[in-house]
Structure formats: structure tokens, C-alpha cells
Image (cartoon, rainbow, N blue to C red; front, top):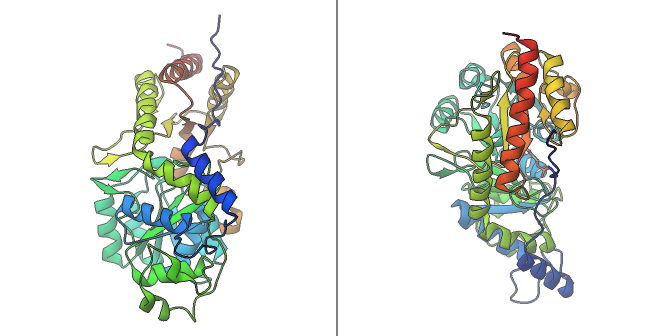
Length: 400
Ligand SMILES: *Cc1c(COP(=O)(O)O)cnc(C)c1O
């Protein structure tokens, strides 16, 4: 009898009751727009920004309508112009090159290592090709940030961090998003807090923060922000910065504030699940687990493994056998973009020469979400199924 897993890989937890009550209160007030405040009232969006700045230790925080919009706002705020080249990861998701393309700028990809992080040797070699690096902590893997910042500082590269998968994570004790000039986050349903859509950016830089607030669609109401610089910073940029609406609203902010308060506990719950799956997969023939450095405190909201140098056909068999047993795996090596996954060579608006070293790794990356609706027993069962199916395909292709 073959065991079949019946959990749903895209089912997140419900929104906490406290957050639902806060949302209902906003709806009852009718004041959903962030600048629609009663006398003396701060508004949920401004309060959320204050909470997020405190949580990350940043001087300034801005809430936005999506993670992708947070990234494009950050790139504009640090001065990226149409036609500029922006360095970014070859291994990332489509909204990352998309945010660069939104500005009429051009992505230049930096390779990926077997640790699934940006290849710092490749970065050092390309550092003179752009003024900005959009660093994607893709799937929560954080590179050696000390070395990365040394390379970027040495080359005068401004770093914008895409922390869509690292909200709550740290490198050597520093929160992800606090190494570069700007850190960007997503609060979309599949990330670490859930407002359907939404995003943040954080920065210590007054001029960048002031430009970002105006870019986000503040009109001249920027004095209603609680985590933005003082009026002088806005005086310096207000005539030269376009208003590109992409604000967050009070309804989303209201449901996010209680979620931020329990972020640490949620991250611990993800990591408990990650550990069970990782332990269940350890030692599977032909399957490589990803080494996580001691200085990286990651959030295991998904897990990746490598089926290094496996044929396309064999990986396809693993995916379909797992799927038949209820286990949904994603494959970053697929030549055809599927669902949420695509590769740098599928983003043809930003054509790039082939990267054979990265292609070899992308070809082997298999990815799985770990929603908090799975119990630890579920995670053990899922790992057992993957282990059995990888093992069966491996044995058939490598007979002793
Ligand atoms: C989800 C995601 C984004 C964009 O976030 P949205 O809120 O969906 O726009 C950016 N980068 C990565 C790596 C992501 O996974």
C-alpha cells in the first residue's frame, strides 16, 4: 500500500482573530485610505511603519502595495535611471528582474553557487558593470554578507536587498535587509506575514526615504508618516520626485500589525518543520542538502535540495512520482516557465548570455513550500515520500 499525502502546499494559516477584529474596526470607520485620518489619529499604516522600523532597527520604514513595487521604488529612490544596468541574481523570481525592467533599466545577472546564494567571485568580476546591486535572498538563502558588502563598498555599488523570503532572518545577528542601503519585503500571502498583497522598504538614508515616500504616492502629506525623515529631507526632493501611486491601505496594515508581533514564533515554527524535512532527507542517494552557514539564521518557510547532474527525464520522473503521492515539488531547471518558477533565460525582455556554471545548478534545484498548516508529522511523511521516490528513480538510473 502506497502512502499518499493529503495536505495542501498552498494553504496558509487563517488570519489571527485579533487581526480580523482590527480589520473590522477599520472597515467600520470607513477610513481605509492611509491619509484619511481623524484628528489626532495616526492611522494603521503609519503605525505599521513605526512597528516595522522598530522590529528591524531601521530609522525609516515605508509600507507599499506589493513587494515588487517596494523594489522598484527602492531602485528609483537610490537613483536608477532608464537604460542603467542593475546587477541581480540569476537565481530569483520573476518580480525581481521585473522591478528593474519597470524602470526601463536592464538586469545583468550574477551567477548562483551550490549553496544557492549569489556567486561572490562572479559579483566581484562584474562589480564595475553597474552602480547598483539588487541582491535577492532567494528562497531565504543568505550569502556571506560581510564579504558581499566588502566587494560592494570597494566597488562603490549601492546594495538594495530583496528580503521577500528573509523577513525575520538574520546574518551574524543583523536582520536581513539591514546591510544594504535599502531592504525590501513582501507581505503577500505566500511570504512570512499575510495581507494578500503588500510590501515594505526600510532604510537609514534620509534622502532615499524621502524620495521613496513621495514616490509611493504621498502627495504633500508626508508629515503624517511616523517612520519617515523630517521636513528638510522632503524640501530637498519634493519638486523632483514623481508620485507613482503604490501605497498600502489601513485595512491591510491593520491585519499585518498583530502578525508582526508574532513573527518570531512563526519563524520558529517554520524552522521546526524545515528541520524535520531536512532530517528525513539526509543521506538520500543522489540528493544534496544545502549547507546552511552558522552565521545564517534563516526562516525555513521552504526547502530546496539539489539533484545535481540528474537528467531532465529523471528529475521529471521524481516530480511526477512525488505528485502522484500528493507531494508538490517545484523545479527551477525547467526550460519552460511553470507556475511561480522561471529561469533567467525565460526573461527574454532582458536577454543575457548563457551562464553554464549557474545553468548546471539551476538544472538541479528542487523546491518545496512548508506551510505552517503542516504538522511536524506531515513534514516527516512528506520527507519519507520524497526519499522513497528519489531513491527509486536513482536506483533505476544507477543500477548497482
Ligand atoms: C514574492 C517575491 C517578490 C515580490 O513580492 P510581491 O509582493 O509578490 O510583489 C520579490 N522577490 C522574491 C524573491 C519573491 O519571492
